[in-house]
Length: 141
Image (cartoon, rainbow, N blue to C red):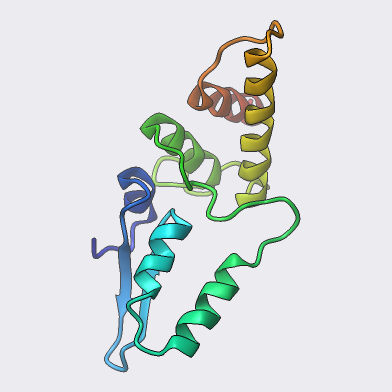
């Protein structure tokens, strides 16, 4: 997809590659929500040194956060809720102070709650989208 609208890559899913910019000097700027898809796209770069450097810079993360945060999230509703928190056409600035690390932490909290529920704890059975939207609502209230 050729676009500068980040919502497209978010809503299209992990297999989407968004070409945001391509210049005459062959500089290309792409966006995707999947590390696997990004690595596959980079594999088509002819210089192996450049390819390896780009992949290494992508894999560097901070703390326990995992980026890209949309990786493996298949629910369109959950992806849309993540977009609302981070910023999109509907809420351009997103949730004040929230960035990829914040959403990554919310995903980890949800996974922990889901494990506890699966182990028999008396925790509600919210979907990921519901969990994220409730968090967004409480923070914006």
